[in-house]
Amino acid sequence: MIQIRKEENQKKQKEKKLKVYKVNTHKKTVIALWVLLAVSFLFAVYKNFTAIDIHTVHETKVIEEQILDTHKIENFVENFAEVYYSWGQSAASIDNRTNALKGYLTGELQALNVDTVRKDIPVSSALTDFQIWEIIEEKEQHYQVTYTVEQRITEGESGKTVRSAYQVTVYVDGSGNLTIIQNPTITSIPIKSGYTPKAVQSDGTVDSITTEEINEFLTTFFKLYPTATAKELTYYVNEGVLKPVGKEYIFSELVSPVYNRNGNQVNASLAVKYLDNQTMTTQVSQFDLVLEKNGENWKIVK
Image 1 (cartoon, helix red, strand yellow):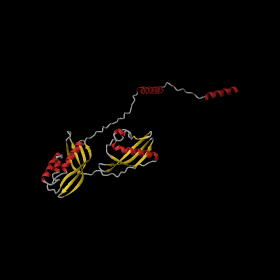
Image 2 (cartoon, rainbow, N blue to C red):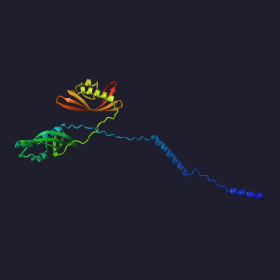
Image 3 (cartoon, rainbow, N blue to C red):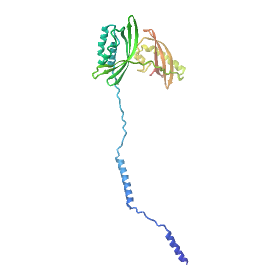
Image 4 (cartoon, rainbow, N blue to C red):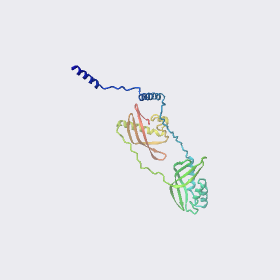
């Protein structure tokens, strides 16, 4: 009886064991995936060896600055102004002016200026001063010129000075010939700016003893400077820092010198008063210098 139950139990345990299924590694899908992986790997290796290095090229555009020679434009406009702003109180003078303007103005502008100065005008004009303030190249071969004129206007026994600002446009052709294509047009010129530079102040880095030494050195130097030769200057100044003057100025004094130390050098900012024997006036020059002490002697190095 016991033997029969034991056999039955063993039979049940065998029936409860899980079945193990083996995946067939040779199925078509698995093979295809392996082939794809292999091809991808081989392609990556190939690209690594055959890849072309790509470098970013930064192009630098070099713009060559051209120097514009404006001498002929300046001379042309000045000669024009001599004619345009001068006339006498006679029909002949007015006619001469009108004919002379043909050498400067286009035909259209000549017609525009026919009656600008009438033959019965009660005043005469003489150009006493002319200044060019600006020349701008508006476009190729077209130049805008801003200038001022000073005229002496005379009526009978009385006279007055008039100062005005104008601009014209000058055309320069391929042969270098010029003509005015815009009539003198009223404009303005720059006036004094309200800018005031920050005053240099001492920062206390130069002691009183050093200040005395520098004052003595600069006093000696500036007494000699006006008449010193280039060779004599080399004892006090590095070559090219200050040029020979060659004037008989008489040294008066150093004015408000300010000294600040910068490493082994001293920055000096000061004015120097001279008496000009020719004009009998006081000449005040301003200097910003860099001094350096070599042994016992000071020298201007910048």
